[in-house]
Image (cartoon, rainbow, N blue to C red; front, side, top):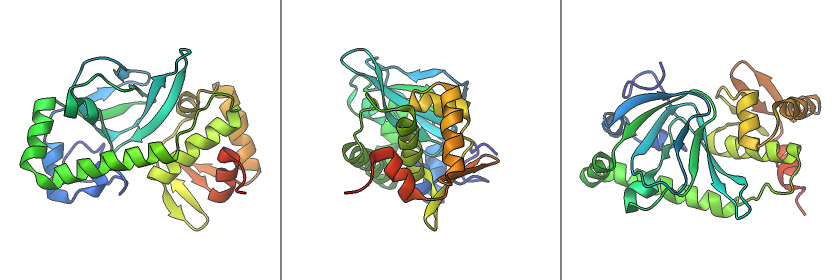
Length: 235
């Protein structure tokens, strides 16, 4: 199953929009739009453009980036299966605030502005969940506003892993598990790092016991140590 059949055979992280909805409401949301598959590297939305559709991500990983004043790409967010993307432009008709790119194969439901807004007007439960999702994203952005400029590769990769594990990981003792197939090329794209460098950094994290990797999973063995690598030791 890839999550395209409403309510059947698929679960999403509780922190995501789809994971937060009860079965019937989730089925109603997943009945909207059309199922679309995107290949790795596909730009799904571009900063500044005047499109208003939304994407309900079913599987895969996307990154949201924005241009800095000096023309560089800054990583703004990571979104995964279960998340909603593009809702701000749908809500106010304004230009896209970020460029959204598939970091691997992505399956989503593409929903028009009219259909999306009509659903939220008819269904208070979905509207409340969407509002809660937007507020949560804003809180995370405010709390974790980090500029990668000047950070070395290990720090950038640690910050990406830390963000993903906090928003989509399953806590386990002192660590957490990311049960998503995060490939090294995807991590390289997310962290703005060359793939050979990602391999080197991951090897160092494994050898030091911070993470372990398995089939389609990354386990953070010690979240506190990962946090220290990403943001420095706590005072």
